[in-house]
Structures are given as structure tokens and as C-alpha cells.
Length: 191
Image 1 (tube, rainbow, N blue to C red):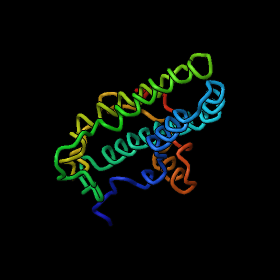
Image 2: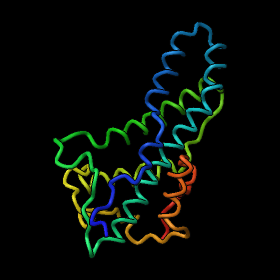
Image 3: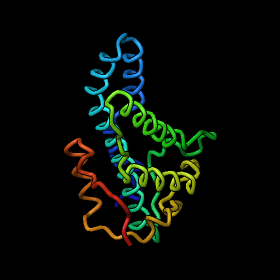
């Protein structure tokens, strides 16, 4: 019997690098001369940007689900968490990823309105998951001291959640299929 549980079950390898894509799009936009070229280019890339944002939100959802699973399954009989790259690291800005995604939402909304001529409404689940994940990071101080499953602190939104699916099966399916779209699109953790 294994006395350790992975920090990341394998979903980290599936997350898209939104910062590189967004920097590439902004660089290319800045090199185009006419507004029509910029509009055409942005319209072509807007679906890809949206797909990357969805991928990142699904990754964060998967992280929250994994934390819930290992916290509830191994709370009384705590297990060591293996592979936590943040453990014992010096202070870092653990909200950087979340804040960056929030800034991408804002930029994407402005750019979408400017280049596409219509408003893009950020799905409520994007903001919801970011808020819950931010709280999760703050409660766990960026995982710097996270060594055992009993050390995990879940946000109130997640503590008493009830799921209509098997978290283990969903995460396993996402990993084996190499697709974070198998992570449910959670609007709100239900109690």
C-alpha cells in the first residue's frame, strides 16, 4: 500500500500556456498596419484564446477537485503528498497565475469589443472558479507548507460539496485522453 499521494495526478501536463499565446497575439496585432487586418487576425485567434482560457479554468477546476478528493479520502489517515514543487520554497507570488488570468479576461473583453464590435461576456463559471481557487491558494499559503493530505485546507465553497460524478474517474479520463475537457464545467460547487 502506498503511503504517498501525488500533488498533481497528471493534469498539470495538459494545461495550455495562455501567456505565450496572448503575448504572441498582442505582438502580431502590434505589427499589423490596418485596423481591418487587426480585426480579421483577432477574430481568427479569438476562438483559440477562448479555448486556452477554458483549458486553464478546467485545469484549476481539476486542481480543486483533486484537492477535495485527497483531502476527504485521506484526512483521518493522512498521507504524504509527493511531488509538491512548492514545498519549502521561498515566498513567491502564488496568486500570479490567477491574477494573470483575470487580466487576460479583462484584456480579452476589451479587445473583443474593439476588434469584433460586440461585447464578450466572461462566463460566470470562469470568475467563480478563479475566486474559489484564489481562496484555496490563500488558505494553503501557496502550498509552501503542504506536506500531508491533512494539511490541505479547503475553501468553504468546497468543504461540503456534493458531486454527481466520480472525481477519480473524471480526472483519470482527462489524463488518459489527454484532454481537460473531461473535467466538468462547474458553475458552482453544490452542497
